Length: 495
Image 1 (cartoon, one colour):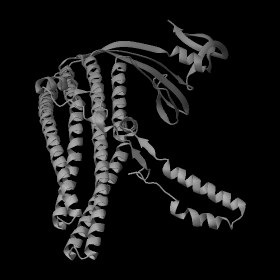
Image 2 (tube, one colour):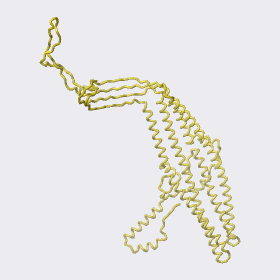
Image 3 (cartoon, helix red, strand yellow):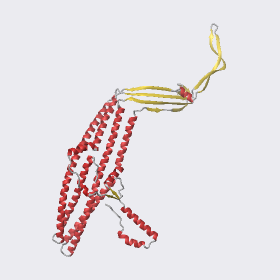
Image 4 (tube, one colour):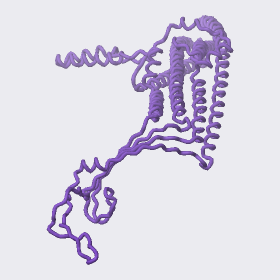
């Protein structure tokens, strides 16, 4: 309901008061009033297309589904990257004191020593029972699952927005009808009051007229409350501020009358099964479950991997030995028989120096390459259990797919039946409303000349009110039932 702030009733006294204020204050007040009036009247007009677009763009449930879809996409990319070689490096430095085994000399030492070592390792899987390939296929299917789930959420949201939009239109017409009935009851009460004052009617007749007006005012209150609530729900779908005022655009009613109401259930169901997001989601999950069976079966096969490594080490305890120098001593190297005479030579010492870091790294550099084969022999029936569980999950997914198809069949056929019933109800309510309208016009004319009492008049007015409300509901129900079928056919929903 559009609410506007008006200053009509305060214009004259307010301007008179402004005459006694300074000119600048008067201008500021006028600008402020104009600004408030503009903001009050500048309500956003929401069309059905705008409501759908805004809901799809802002709805948080859709955003969550899109996040899940993005995560599945990353898992799919990672499963393809798993076919690439894996490399790792492990540098290490330590300061040792006390007795320890020097890795560069492979001897025990008892001194303070700085050691540095490191290695680079690589591995690539050559065969793993087809698990890498099957995992890629399954992750691609899981991406399709999440995409189907996102499409399902979007379609469900579109249907909810359209349903709520039509509910608002219905409630708007009910509010308008309730206001019209209040005007009629006011005229009836005014006539009853005059007739009572003139002594032509009793107090009971006047009370009947007052009761009818109170009833109509209560109907307006209820209708207005339903309208406000339906607008609030639409705002929630669009993730709007509940306090923000909007105006829902009402389409041309004449365009809503040309609605297709005749459908063939078999053709309709066949088309719906091909595009319905619920069925596609169940079918995609079934494919993912089938692919998972192939993944776990790979546990029966051996795995073959190619690996390699390279590394080196350094220790400042190592010394680099060079040439020799005489030390001034005479060393005995043996004895000559038979007199056991000693044989001597001049003594020499070996030259020792620091072993440079990069030279030591270069001298200690090593490489290795090999093939690793792992053959599963007995894993406590873990692989067999995984395969059996995967098959059970697949059978369950197949059942869920059939359930989705059965539910869709039921919904489609019921939607056709509901549309036919709504069309017949519209014809019936139209005839009832026209008959009650003619009857009320006749009763009103006779009531004005005193030929009908107030009880008959109020009864006729009540029947007219009810038939008018029923007609409004029936008219929009036909539109809604038709749009439901368009939704399941994948047709764009427009008004």
